[in-house]
Length: 213
Image: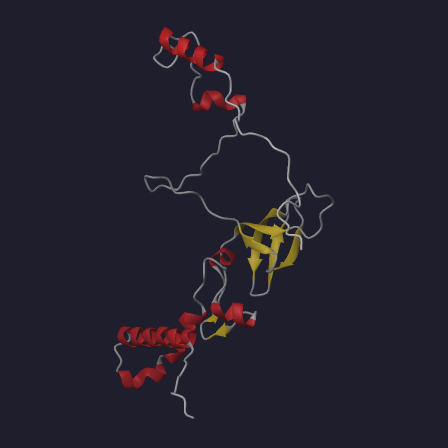
């Protein structure tokens, strides 16, 4: 007996081969080189792919696969939020009760591929690992394209003046004015008794379908 040959390939591997080849051809075109000189730019092409940061996982493929920063010809790659000093989020490892926040805002002073020097809210400076750190986030962009922080209303009485004056109940506006016909129709609707089920209730019959021999 013979069976037809059914070859199977690795779809993910073939897809990555195409990504690497596109990066190589783009690098050759940018350096004005021929296709025979692809070995000269293969390192730069692989470096660009390995350092490509995913915004979903906040890590590049090399970090997700091997779990450590890779040293490249141009140095060690770091995310942008670690290279700029400012406010970042740090996970609170010790919590006194369940009502404490999971993270706290700290000021990033210096960072390297493994550790960061931060300043806590009480003024103390300490060294922390990069694992409990996360970017703080950015400002929302308004419709006109200008970055602006969006303020969410909490519904407190103090915010009524910001959102607008509350309409007066005695104000003769079309929303407050109602005709007598609408009032009479609403009264008739409330006076109508609720509809009840007309299904006939019967006792449950058990052991009626069993056949006795």
